[in-house]
Image (cartoon, rainbow, N blue to C red; front, side):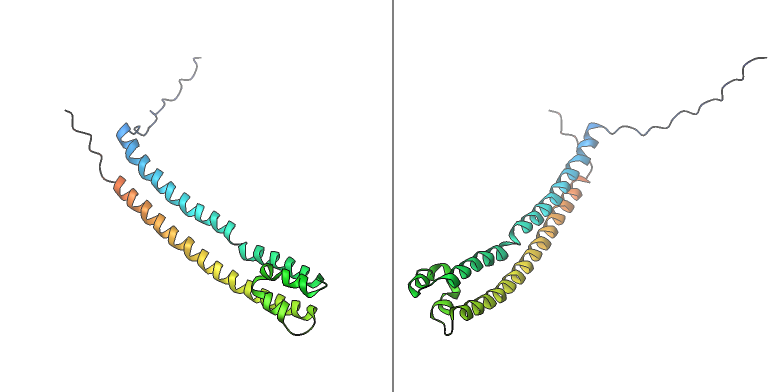
Length: 156
């Protein structure tokens, strides 16, 4: 008895390897398109840093209002005029007890916070949309430029 013969193997089909010019033709648009998306991502990253600014400002202002509430004499309140900013007139020169004036100033501060936050949110959204569109247009332009056939440089 003889050993069975192995079945004939089919030759493996391999894709032709791209030549150096073809690699360059594909690599450049992909790199530009990647950079386009990276720019849009960086804008989003910037937005995460800018978004909490109104809240931080209001928290600091709230601390100043707490100090104004604890102030015992009008001279101490008057010395805080610059720190109180927009609410200085209401807290220092307003009518009623100091606690009532600080409560009114905090209410106005919260309204201002909401308005600033809404404004910043709208601006950041527009910024992200506009930069994303610009980056996509830039990437599409570069991808279109890279799709032209490669012509090797003329030999001199």
